[in-house]
Image (tube, rainbow, N blue to C red; front, side):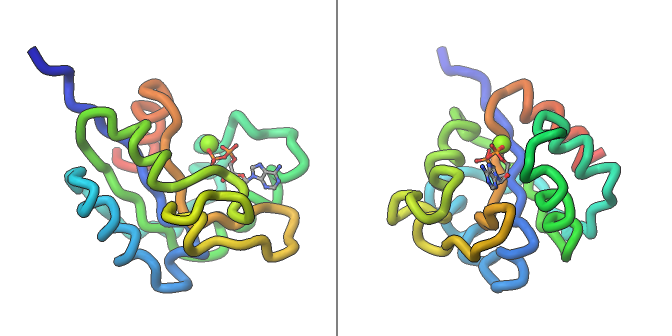
Length: 140
Ligand code: DAT
Ligand code: MG
């Protein structure tokens, strides 16, 4: 018996797109063995970002975060594979790019730019509930 194949939402954030790292990020997802199911380039509306980041409303980095995510195109990707939600979070590395482990996307390509929000190249859903909710927002 095998477990159900999961799906997650990955976003290449505006800094990743602007730095031409989309291909490298897709390469790492594919090299790990996960499947790309759907992909789109999106200039996100504020209302979509407010829903996407609703859990962070009221935090000091919330406004800068939404402004950053509005600042340029985002690549949204539906990715599938067993335990892909957890697996992509490991590929991405921890939130703070300064201390994210080398070998991870954030650790290899991210740094602190002295801004009010960390620019860390990618988003990955953090639970099955988040993945379901976020995939509906970005692919509907
Ligand atoms: P993650 O993207 O690792 O799931 P999160 O959901 O806690 O992290 O936060 C969303 C984004 O907000 C994160 O990718 C970068 C930014 N961020 C989080 N905590 C921050 C902080 N304390 N200071 C500045 N930016 C922060
Ligand atoms: Mg998060």
